[in-house]
Length: 278
Length: 278
Image 1 (cartoon, rainbow over the protein chains, first blue to last red):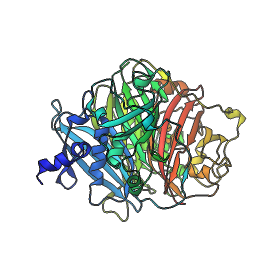
Image 2 (image 1 turned 90 degrees about the vertical axis):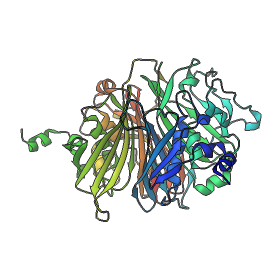
Image 3 (image 1 turned 90 degrees about the horizontal axis):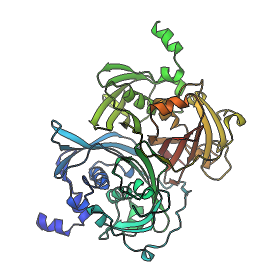
Image 4 (image 1 turned 60 degrees about the vertical axis):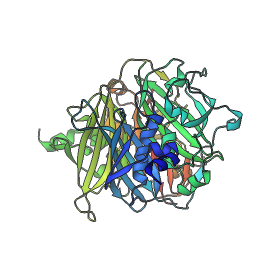
C-alpha cells in the first residue's frame, strides 16, 4: 500500500498527529489544517503530538499518567520538530521531557512552540476508591450535536453534545459546561486522543461572558486514571466532560475539568491556566 | 556581616532554599535537614527551589503564574545543581524550564532529581471575577496547632491548624482536609513560599485511610492568582487550604487544593498526582 493510500485509510486524528522519526529522540510532524483554531492549531493537537511522541518510543515504561504542556508560542503552518528525552527511569515511573520547535521569522534558529513533561507509570492491582461521582446528565442521544458558532476546523473533528454551558450562548452566570464528546468519525480512544480531548473544553471566559474574548491556553496539565486496558474497554463511546473555572484574575483564569467514561469512571482530571484579553 | 551571621539572621525558609549562582543559568543549593520528609526533602522544598531559581533571574518578565514540578527521583542529603533556561519570552508571558540534578551512586554523572516548567506573566487591570467562594471554616485562633503524628522536620516549619481531615486521624470516610497554614516562625509570603505551601496538603491517602501508606508525589502543578502586590498585602497572615482527591486508582491518586487568603481571595489552585503503595 502506498503512503498516499495509507494516509487515506487513517483516521483524520492519526493522519494529523503522524510523526516521522528522523533520528533517536527526534521526530518530525506537520501542523494540520483539519485541527485549526484561530491563530494556530487547537492546543489539544499540540498536547496529542507531545503524548504521541512519547508513547511511540521503544523504551517507554508503562502507560501515561501525567502530561503538562506549556504553550510557549503559536504553532505555524508547516513542519515542526519534536525532541523527546527520558529524564529518569524508576521502577514504577518514567519522566520525559518533550520540546516542540519550529523555525520562526523573528527568532534565529528554531523557536520553542511547546514544552511538555510527561510521566508514564506501571499501574498495579491495589486498593482503589472512587471518591468523586460523575454529575447527572442527559444521555448523548437526548442532545443534539453542537453547531460551532465560529470557524475553527478542530471542532468539526468532534461530536460534541452539550447539556450545559455552550460557549457564547450560556446565560447561567457561571463558567460551568457539561458535554459529551467523541472523535468524529468514531475512533477508539487512546492516550493521544485523550490528551486532545483534555483541551476540548474551550476557555471558560466564553461561557461566563456572552461576548467573544480573545484567549489562549498558557499551560495544560492532565492526569490519566486507568491503564491501556481500561481505555480498550471504553472503545469509541462518548465521554462526559464537566468543566469550570475558580477565578478570572487580571488577564488569566484557571479552569478544571473531569472526563468520565459513559459508565461513570473518571478517566482524566485536567486543568489549565488561560490568558484572556478583556 | 559574615556569611555565618547572615545565615543566622535569615528565616529558616530563606536559609534552606538559598541558591548560589555558579554561572549564568546555573545555581547551586543544598538540601536542608530542616525541611526533611521520610526519604528526602519535603516536595514543597524542591518546588520552592525551582521557583526561587527563576524569580532571582535578572531577565524575568512579570510574576509567576504557573509551576509544574515532576519529582524524578528522591533528593539526597548534600548539594544539588539547578539549571534554569528561559525557553521563550513573549509580550505577556515567559516560559522557563528548570532541572535539578544531583550526583547519584548508580547513575553515571548527575541524575535528574526534578524537572519543572514555570511560566511568569505580566498581569493587567482587566475584567476579574471570583467564581469559587472559600469554604466556611473556624478561625485559626479557634483551632490548636497540629502536633505532627510522625517525625518529619518540615512539618515543624509550619503553623498548621486543622479544622478537618487530620492525617491518620480522620474518620470522615473521605479525603477532604481543611486547614490554616503559615510559616513558623512567621514570614511574609512570596512565590517560593507559596510553592512550598502548595505541597503542604499531605497525600490524601493518609486522610482517606487510617493506616500509614507509603506514598510520594509524582508531579505537582500550581497556578498563582495575584501578582507580587497582592502577596505583599497578605504579609504573614494565615492561609486557608482545602484539599481533596477525586480518585485512588491502581497505585496513583490525584489531589486538588485551593489556597485562600484570610479575607477570602483565591491565591493558588494546585493539583498533584501521587504514587501510593497499598
